[in-house]
Amino acid sequence: MSKIKKKRVGFVLDMTPLVDIAFLLLTFFMFTAKFKSETESEQKFTIKRPMASADTSKVPEKDLAMIKIGIDTVANDTAYYFSLSNEQDRKIVYNSDKIQIPEEARQKIILKVTDLKTMEALIRQTRIVNIRMKFAIDADKRIKYKWIEDLTEVMRKSNATIFNFVTDRPS
Amino acid sequence: MGGGGGGLSVQPRVKRGSFATVRKKKKRVGFVLDMTPLVDIAFLLLTFFMLSTTLTTPQVMEMSIPPETENVEVKQSELLTILVRDDGQIFKVLGDKKQNPPEKVALKDLRALSINENMRLENRLIVALRVSNQVPYELVIKILDELNIAETEITQRLAAKGMKRERKFAMTPFTEEDREDLKGL
Image (cartoon, rainbow over all chains, first blue to last red; front, side, top):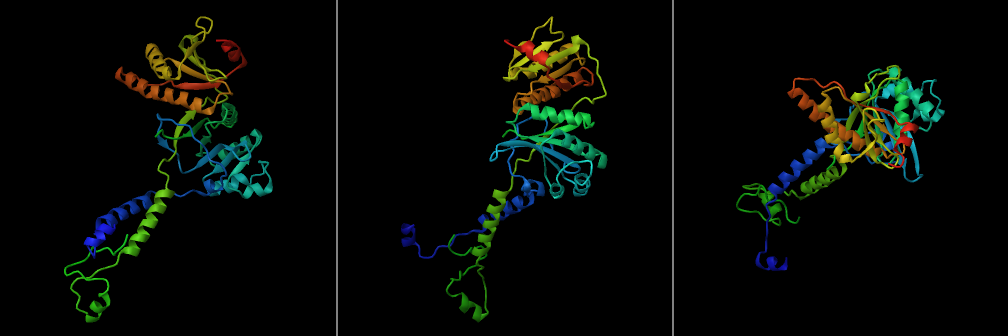
């Protein structure tokens, strides 16, 4: 630095191209940015999704019933987490008297479900409220298959026979 | 990032110090805009958006399971059963297990197996997947992915023969009997 300074007293750097690129990138990232949804911000665990390359369709955004199976690494506890993307449907389903959950849980966005009976009631009620509801299972790749098997069995009983496994694309 | 962006500077160049005097004169030929704060903010926002966006959006793999009320009859000869044992070892059974005892298969051979058997039986084969509930979920997805990759290949090859793909694979429950069959293999 000092060498250059000795030679030139004033020094002007043309920053125009730099600024051009910076703004280009800025607009790109601004438009592609997708912020965490309400559901995700309430979630206390991260899911390590399995990789799959064959099917590359995107997660449906409308009428989505998401069932997450996550490992809470702090409490070391695995459980089902149920959430509905549609707010109106969520209110109706969560407040249904057919579902036995604590009163304070009815106001939440994500429901932690530990028994399969409640899960069955939730799935059934969801299908009654909105028949177009699509189910997605977002499970951690480290869990035992038993969790999925139990869940699909419950879904089969409720006639929700088409569902999606949420996966990640291998990089 | 020192020094203002001289992007819009026109000759003769005006030095920073003499900015005020130039203004007073109101005889501006060229003018210099100090872009430093603008660039600062732009970069701040850029870093924020770059760090907060996740470019890898999750995707989905569609599955369907047979409904409870429906019982599908399958001929033994048209059935390929893929069994996954507790320790994650994969086995195949072609047709009747008494004639063809379970055979070990590697995960990477599943794709070729599914394609070959499907082409041999030309659209009549049903692949049944029975997974022990002790297996990690990741392995199940890997197997499903292999079968899905095979599926596109099969559909293409059948289309070349003028046939439409009808049957896909199905997931059926793993029984105690299966566990016994695979013991010690």
